Length: 402
Image (cartoon, rainbow, N blue to C red; front, side):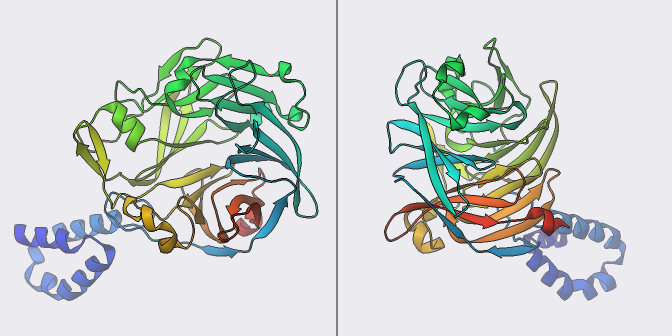
C-alpha cells in the first residue's frame, strides 16, 4: 500500500498525468484495493484540489481556464518627444508621465478627442532643493484628491499635490512636503492616504516584510506579514532586496492593498483594520527559485518573473511578463517583444476571482487603467524606429460583466 501511495503522488504531479493514471488503473483499484477505496478517494480528492489552475505553488504549471478577449490598439501620439519614460498614472483625461528626457522629472499630458496627447506642462526638477528630488514615482490618492510623489533619494521626500493643480503647476509652495530618511532604504512605497505610507523595507532586520510609516510623526510600525518560508538560509535583508521585492497597488476607497512579487509569482490581496492585517487572499503563490551563494543569493534560471499589477476600485489587472531568469538574453526572440513588456493582462476582482484575460495587439512596457475601467492605456516603443508612443485599448468591463 505504501508503494502504491508513493507511485500515485509521483505520477500525479500534473493534472494530465493524474487523469491518465486514474483511467489506466481504475479497474485495478476497484477489484483488488476495495479495502483501501476510501483512503484512495481521499488522496484523489486532495490531488484534484491541489492541481486546480489559477493559484499555483512552486513547480506547477498554470493555464488560464477562463474567458479570453483580444483587443485592438489605438495609437496616441504625443505632441512632444519622449526619450526615457519610467511609469505613468492616469486621472480622468490627464496622464502624468515619469520621464528623464527633460530637466523636469514629470510631464503632464492631456488626452485629446482626436486621439492625440497634448503636453500641458512639466514639474519637479532633478536636484536637492525644497521642491526637487533626484528620483521619484507618482501615485494618485483618489480619496484625498491628491497626487503624491515619493522620492527614494537620501533625503526621502514626499510631495502631496492637490489634483486640481496638476493642470497648473505654478504654485509649488502650496504642496505639502514631508521628509523622512526611512524612505531612502525602502524598496517600495505606496501612499495609503494623505498621512500613511505602506513601506516594503530594504533594511529588514527581522522577518517582517512590510511596515506603516506615519508621515506627521515619522513613526514606523511593522505589519504582521512575514517572509515566505522557503528554507533558504539567507539574511532578511538579502531576501527583501533581491528576492521578495515587489509592487504594491492600493484599492481606492477601501482598506485593501495588493502585493505582487518581482520574482516568483506571488500575488496576494491584504485587508487592514486599525493598522493590522485581518485578511489575506492569495491569487498566485509560486515561490521564487533561488539558493544561497557565498555571502549572497542566486536566482535559478527556471525562476519565473512576477506579474505587473495595476488596480482600480473594482478590479486587479496583472500583466504577465512570461519570463524566467534564463530567458533574459533572448527575451525578444522568445516572446516577440522586449524584456519586461507584456501583451497579456489577467483581470481579477477583489475577492480573488478570475474575470477575463486580455490579449493586447501591441505589447506595452507599463500601463494604467482609468477609474471607470473603460480603457487601458499603455506605453510602447516601435521595435524598428524606437519611437515612443501611447496605445489605448477599449475594455468596457461593465459590459463584459453584464
